[in-house]
Every structure is written in structure tokens, then in C-alpha cells.
Amino acid sequence: MTDTKVTRRNAIKGVIAAGAVSSAGYLFRTNTVMGQSSAPGSVERLITLEVNGTTRRVDVMKQETLAMTLRYKLGLTGTKLGCDRAECGACTVLIDDVPHYSCSVLTHTARGKKIQTVEGLASADGKLHPVQQGVVEEQGFQCAFCMSGFLMATVGFLKTNPNPTRQEMAHGVSGNLCRCQDYDKILTALMRGAELSRSA
Image 1 (cartoon, rainbow, N blue to C red):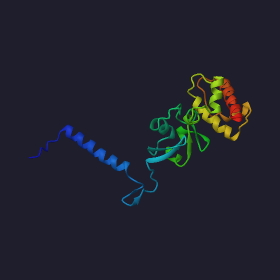
Image 2 (cartoon, one colour):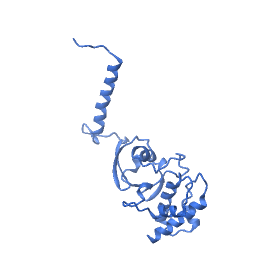
Image 3 (tube, one colour):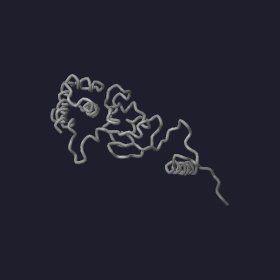
Image 4 (cartoon, rainbow, N blue to C red):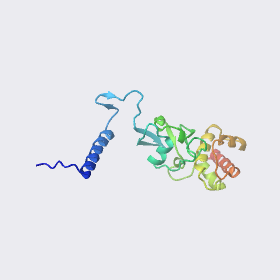
């Protein structure tokens, strides 16, 4: 005789087992299910991103921002979340060499593009990027929370203007804010980084 008594423990076991089966089906699925493609307008959750020269597979929600994916899914915490509404620049990353606020970019829109974060600036042997080196030499920071955003904005700006004046540099990174408000020291450091970039 089979015991058909419903208990809380058996109910929880059933829910866990059902979740495991559905998760396995999701993880091993392809773009087509039973020979049918995804519905028009739907967004695949398991996507491929190219981040700092490495291909990464990640599960994202359709409303998920790139900043959230980089920090909490890929562990790239150099991308800071400050205002989380595209005002402070702390989350700046390069997408195809152009600076973007990653808090206002949906992750799935970055598929097929080259994403670079502050972790990807230094070379494989650990040598700092010239802009990073300039910041170190000039001690261009206080709390440094904003600095990764300034670094990425500067690297992107120097791709379009490798020999800026101080005023041009200030305009180039004007989308980034410093909580400590030590902009003079930051600009001095970024100008030193630009100088080192030209001689690299």
C-alpha cells in the first residue's frame, strides 16, 4: 500500500524536483524548441557577450542593465553603480571603443559588440594602461569610487582626440562626476595619462 499522505516536506521535495527538471530543460535548450523558433519580439536569456576580449555566456533578464550583468553576473566590480540613472558616469564602460553609461544599456543590446571594462585596461602581463599609470603617478583621486568611470571615459575620448588641451579633456570627461570634487587633481592625472599614451 502506497502512502499518499501530503506533508509539507513532500510538497517541498516536489517543488524542488519540478524546478530542477525545468532548469535542466532551459540550460540545454537551443534557439528552437520542438522545431519552432522563438516568438517575435522575445529575448533570449542565455546570451554570449565579448567582455575584455573574452567570450562569456551569461543568463540575463530582458530588462537587465549591462552594469548589473557586469557586476553581479560576471564579477567585474570595477564598474561602479553610483546614481544608477545615467548621471554620474561611475559605471562607464567602452562598447566598440565608445564610452557608455552601462547602467542605461540593456545587456541584450550589447551582443555582438566589444565591451571593455576597467579590468580590461591593463595588459595581460599586468602592465598598467598609460591612463591608469598617469593617475597613479599624479595621485589623481581621493576616495577613488569615480575613478574607473573617469578612466574609461578618458580612454574612449583619447581615441578621438589623442592630444587634447586641458580644456578639451575637461569637456571630454564632463559626463563624469566626482563625489570628492577634486576635479583639478583628476584633470592633471588624466592629462598625464594622455601624455603617456602618446609616447607608448
